Amino acid sequence: MLFANLAEVIHEAIQETEVAFFTSDIGIKAGPSVTTSADEPYSPPQADVTAIIAFNGSLDGGVHLSAPFHCAVSLASAFSGEEIPSFNEMAKDAIGELANIIAGAVKIRICDDQIQLTPPRVVIGRDHQIGHTKRQTTTRCYFRTNSGPFLIEIFYQ
Image (cartoon, rainbow, N blue to C red; front, side):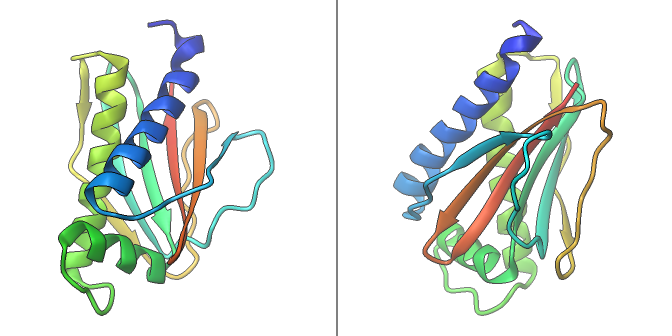
């Protein structure tokens, strides 16, 4: 696959995952989405919870799924099928698994068996920021649900 087409492939993978998984499988209507590169100004949602999956092998980078606490709890509740009252270990596991599903969709769409995914890591803290090197290309997709906004960011080189 040409590296120049990667941003478009990643955007399509995220959009398809959002529609197929979030809407059909766990019943969360997420939209409209805004997609930007790292150079385009856009205010991301407050990040209180960020799940991180790294890509290793033929693609160096990863996936961030970030949301404020209230939205993360709502996403985790929908994913688990149980009402989760606050951000706890069950919510943490669910958010990590959601990021894993998104990373897996990107890997499948790229069609490269040489890409390995790391287990999810979840960072928790009010309005934190997660960075990556400026050498990496970034595709960001912003979504809004009835419970609030969330961000999916893919970064790679």
